[in-house]
Length: 409
Ligand SMILES: [Fe+2]
Ligand SMILES: [Fe+2]
Image 1 (tube, protein in one colour):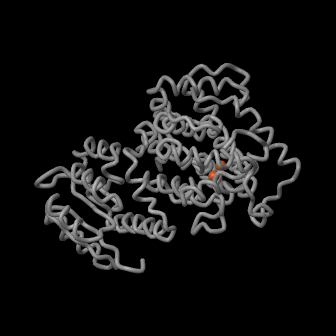
Image 2 (image 1 turned 45 degrees about the vertical axis):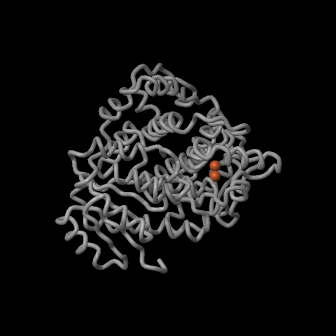
Image 3 (image 1 turned 135 degrees about the vertical axis):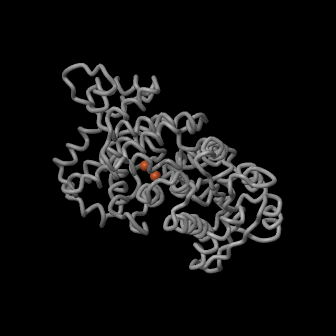
């Protein structure tokens, strides 16, 4: 960053010492306070980019303190240190939007500076953009936290020892609605099953964990981000667009990188979430979003362009901030941020390109709708890296043609 970033740590003295040593090599200006009121005074007097608070402060709790910071100094990022015993309160602090990320104690010496650096980089990107997006996001009463069912599922799917199918089944079965939808899908034309699928376990096997993950996440997103009416914009159409894009990105990846199945998995989830920012806008920046959608319809244009015109930023920025806040892997953050402009992505360009191309093809196919009047322009050079023969295009089209019948309820 051009100027040294100022970070404020509100922590007990013994932690302060360890932090000082850890951050010695960074070009930051760390400030320290022993309690919440002292920290609020510091914030009043100096510009602080990032605040890290302990869970138990002498004069208030860490979540209470961060709640005050959010109200009075919304431009500062807020992180909360928490131990195992604080898990419940920390979950609440996240759900209420007091804290934007938790740092678990004991922290990992290699990881902590990286986390802080990532937030500072985000801030820098926003500054370059000119719009004070962070203030706007911080003022949203409660940005959704990732639902615990999804986190549990993710944990299980990421298990280095391999996916435990019994555990996946157990997690999915804990929600009757999700189980019912899963069984319906497993028995639909999509799965190609000749015999009836009668158990959730079998449905998970038939559909694959990707689709299960998508279902759990989509249902959760619908619960938290699907309540506002925006004329011309339809949540379920966007979901169809997203899953269609995911299916195509995976097909393209399997063809392009036949020896790397993990790229196909990554492309799938990155594509599912690429338009996440639209959901946040619809729910929390509703008036702006209504204007942008109406403008795109009147102009017969692209939503991403009318968003930028009206708000100064688009769903790409918003979605990537939320994904970063949820601590999602960088390929998801970058796909959300750069799917309209893959050449600019600082990393993960392979995945971002897959999402970019799939996003365009799915709109050509007319499966689902994402708020655009016509398919977005495609980066020709990247497009041509894929050998998109008429046969392969037809295969892709056949694969997604029934997706509109997929319903989350
Ligand atoms: Fe988009
Ligand atoms: Fe899209």
